[in-house]
Amino acid sequence: MSISERINILKKFKNLTYPILTIYLSFLGSKTPSTSELKRQFHSLMTQNLTAREKKHFGNTIQSIDDYFDETYDSRGKRSVAFFGNGQRPGLRPEGSGPAGGASGPEGGLFEILEFEFPIAPLCRISNSVFLDPITSALLEHKRYLVLLIDREKTRLFTVHLGEIKEHEDVFINIVPQKVRADEEHFYGRSDKIFRHTEDHLNRHLRLVAEKAREFMKGKRINFIILGGHEELFEKMKRHLRKDIRDKIAGEFVTELNVPINSVYLASKKIAKHIEQDKVYAEMESSLAGV
Image (cartoon, rainbow, N blue to C red; front, side, top):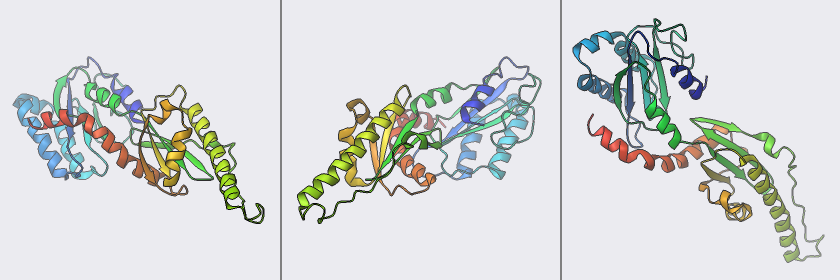
C-alpha cells in the first residue's frame, strides 16, 4: 500500500470515541541518527506535552512506539517518522497493512506508523482526528521529479516520488537504438565528414528524446529534472529541450545506462536531497531548538 493510500485511510479516523495521539519525530543534517537519539526526542516530547493522566491513557500507544524502536525501526534513508494511536493496543502490524482496526469503527484500536525520507518538524498533539497537516504541507514541498538518462544510442526515463522510483520504458519503445557506422573508407578519408555524420545522427537522436520527454511531461506535475548518463551529452541535450523544460533541470550525474534501477534512485536522491533540504531547514532548526 502506498503512502498516499495509507494517508487517505487515516483521514477517515475522525470524531472517534477515543482521542488520537499524533507524534512526529525528525532530525536535521546528513548524519543518520541512532535509535536512542529518536527515543530521547520521543520521551522529551512526552514529558513536555502530556500530563500524567494522558500518559496513562495513551500507555499502550507509548509502549508500542518504544517496542517499535527496540524491535523494528531501521533508520537507513529515513529523516522522519510519524505515529498515530488512540491508546487501544491493536498490536504492531507489517508495514503497509493500513491502520490497525481498519475501518471497523471508532471503537477499534489505532496504531499506525509512517516513515519519510525528508524532515518534518517534531510535534506532539492530542485531537479527535489524525493530525496530518504537517505531512500534507511537507508533501507539497517534496513533489515528483524526473530522471532522464542519455547516451549516444539509448535513453531511459524515470519518475521519483515519496521514496519510490518508476521506470517508464514505454516512452521510448519506438526508438530503436542504432549505432553510427562511419569509417574513413566510406567518406574517402575525410574526418570532417565523419564528424558531421556522427553529429547529425546524435542530434536526431537527442531531438527525438526531447520530443518524447516533452510529450511525457505534458499535464504531469514534475517539480524538477535530473539529467544522468554520459557527461559530454548534457549540454547538447539541454540545447534540444524546450526552455520551460530546460529550466527545470536541477542537477546531473554521470553513469552508464545499463545500471540497476536502484542505482539510478540512489544517485538521483543525493541530488534531490540537496535541492529539498534547504526548503525545510529554517523551520526544522526553530522546532528542534524547543525539543
